[in-house]
Length: 396
Image (cartoon, rainbow, N blue to C red; front, side):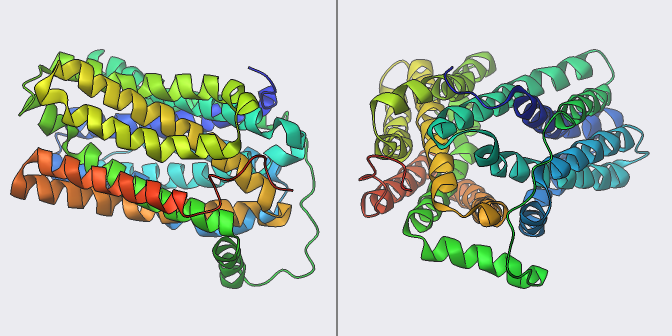
């Protein structure tokens, strides 16, 4: 891959993301097998871990903009490592939930800092390649986490997955100490934390490219999570797939993510940023068409094709929008702008999942697929009415 991110940054982000994703995959297994918890407790554990991304991101963005980003990455990696070890010895689900929330809270500023430091480490011409390599590292960690947690559970020690998460955090820690301590941009004023957060939100609202990114992401994530809430009931119910066949089809999503990250630099060198930005919503809409065709064709093939497109297209979008965000955002606002977009996305995800689940319970899984199709279409229309498709190059 041409123009990848520095190896130390790749290892740091991959370790942090692996620690987060392994913990997320391990929580339901530990709660069920080690503590005998029911579905309500399992859901609460997963929610506690995910809540960190919603509650911590905004103040973390201020921290990232006021502190050398390599220093933030070091602290995040050390914190995630120690808190994964604390979760390993948690005596009950309550303490496990608290430790998981705190571990994720350490990861959040680390991820924001990892993407904010990219323009300080690579030339402007290499942004797309660097961001693609970082997204590839995250995709690999996401794919590896569930099998690792499942292996530990099959071995009879589901809590051992948290030890693996701590090892991933330790790898991130070692790599983070190899990053240069570059100072943060000088700011004329350092407003109080709430004012600083609002400054980032106002910049997103005032910058037309970022406003479009936020609106497209909100519509897309609402639709995606409405779809995710009903895919398993759809596959095992109306489509009549076996669990093994459904699992194979769902695995195509991860393949789409990885291939998208590998192809993005090559595609970006031959097309415009607007083309890659258009690919996310457009291919997502086509993915729903493939899923809707499942009852009339080879169901597992149609479902797998839909899942692949839902990984491939949005990965192209993710890499392009991150590079665009780096281009139009002042260096001193990168952390807060990233946090603002992060909160907007994570805020609508549970709403989309609840809407999809409720509609499926009322009218069946197929109705929720139509809801997702509508959401993807909205994201496409918002993008087409924005300046994003016309981008021939990253703006100065």
